[in-house]
Length: 362
Image 1 (tube, rainbow, N blue to C red):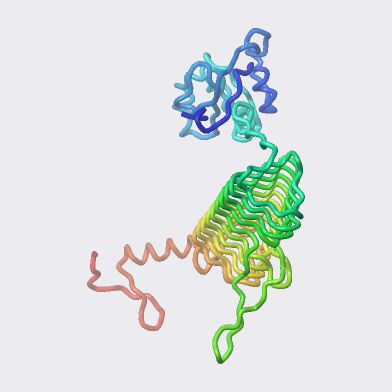
Image 2: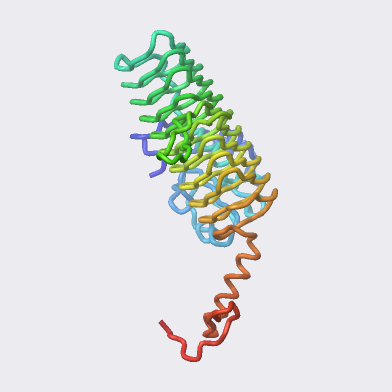
């Protein structure tokens, strides 16, 4: 069930007009008269599971058409190209981006619970900390010396906020997260278990062994950033580690010391960004990809899943493979190898392919 009331706050029912306004969308002209606008919608649901009082959405694409044709929903958010496929029993809410519109409607029915102002009696808060009266500090949280926490921010249970950390407005720090040596902007969400601001992996090699290099930088996180569960963002050595405004970082990502992440980047699960690498704006790293240190990834570059980047990447490039290379070159190599395998060809000792006279089918 979408929006199980045991876990998610729920509002409604809402009129069709209210839903359309929330979606920043339009309505099919056939339904624009007053009576349909007073239609009451009770909740959101997936396309196939929606009931007669629900609102749902449909993305473009042939694979969604059967479910759209059979949906029992009272209203469907669709692109203009799909509105004629909406059943006659449903209202077509027309949006340029149905997923964005649906997310707004979902927030209407299931808004984020507001902060509960105050400090839980079990929290440990330094006397020098400045906590806005509208902020919430949860059970067993630890707030260090000279910490600043802005209005309506929420510090989850067992979270640890180190000395001197500055947290802006409407920030959410999840349960058991730790934040130190950091300046955090507004509307940031740091998910449970994330680690922000710990020492980076820096050491010198000597004849006697390893010598740890002090990590004297900070982590600076811009506005509207999300940092996923159990992700780690190390503080810088001498420069700061920076996460640009609007960036989304998934769970289990490693951001090393001195990394500079630009605005509105997307970094998917299990990605590793090595130290002092620069990601310009709008870069995408797909799952389990990685980049060596001291490189520059150009604006709008897209790095495919499990790719290994070992050289600078020009702006708007698309790379795959390990070592990473342009997408077309990667698939040409894959196609060539497949042809060799089908033909029973194996590389010769001097690099030239030759035919295997007795290929092993296994």
